[in-house]
Image (tube, rainbow over all chains, first blue to last red; front, side, top):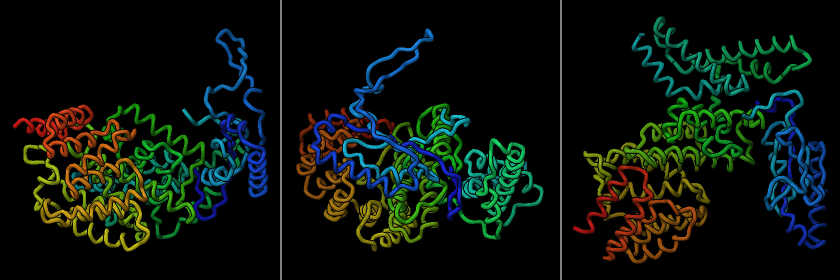
Length: 132
Length: 414
């Protein structure tokens, strides 16, 4: 919870905005759609430059490699993303905002024509994880 | 223990808990700490009021004490910060907020609190639980009982929601004008859900959960006080009053369910009806109509019918049509179909109900087969009616409603 009533300045927090996309829709989309979406991203970045701390488009999940730690202390490596869902993370932004409302306002502007976005607070280094 | 002081504290707990906690939360910026401060204030009141008498304004007394506790807490926090300068820097917001509020008038922070509790980033059940606990002062056990879950489950749900509020920084603030309409609609839905759960309990032996219905009425009155110009708020309070006015007429002396057609309208609460009608009129002065003013208008049409047979079903149907246009939910469609049957006869009603058979949101909702059963009965299709009552009985969880359905089914053979 942040107190931010009447313009009280509080410290900022970071959020990652994950862009979840249906990859098949991307494959089917024509170059015009792809270009329009990229233009929308450029516009989004220009509009929110003050809040942006990073972000990238990612290669398709086919290029992903998943690592799980096994009970015997080793690792098991497998091809692909973790979740067996239609939507996979296609890109992300790292943004800075005073509170969740501001983060949601920015994230709602992220173009995601074939899916949606998820806003996750960044856990600052050295701080205990609050979620049980 | 001084019984007068204890009674005054209990009364203040019910009437002022949310205000006291909200004032402390403004200072602590942390709901758990604010709850502790409010708890301390009430514990202190028990002894202080027994010794010195009950203060003229118990709410102001409690708020002042809770805020003093919060200030102590902040000072202690600041001291710790001074000792650990590397780990935690100074937080100007905390001290600044504390001083800014030191005036004579204690602001009513309950609106901030309810917007935090009903934030759309929280799950709906968590919104309801937080609202009942933080605004209404229900214990976790009471909230658990109201929603038929175990205390452990409810405690985990509340803890999780509070942690998300902290981790994701859900703000303690009334949303700005651009966000207010959407967010307020979410708040109204939470209060409405508390009311409907209390008005007809989804399960259990009692038809109504008066504790929940009354808390919903308190919350709606609070919103009305804090947002006197909002038509949605006026509409919701009107809807609750006009529906709640029937509370004494909804069961017979033996506790059996009486549907609208069988209720003694003389037992309806005239005071609540006239208050509700005035509010509904006020809410309906604003265009375009929104959900709760329209629902209040429907409730008002029932409330002003002298007898069930004199109900203006054409008007109710027209209102449901308007409601369905702005709020296209399967539940609205179901109620519209029932109204259609009253206005144009059971065959028309049944056809409209059958059109909803494939609605996924209505599978498992006993009012659909129950309504079908009534229209089938009136059409003389008794075998089908019997099956429909069976289906409704399979789905209904409230004992009083089940007894009613069983009696209606048995009535087919009479």
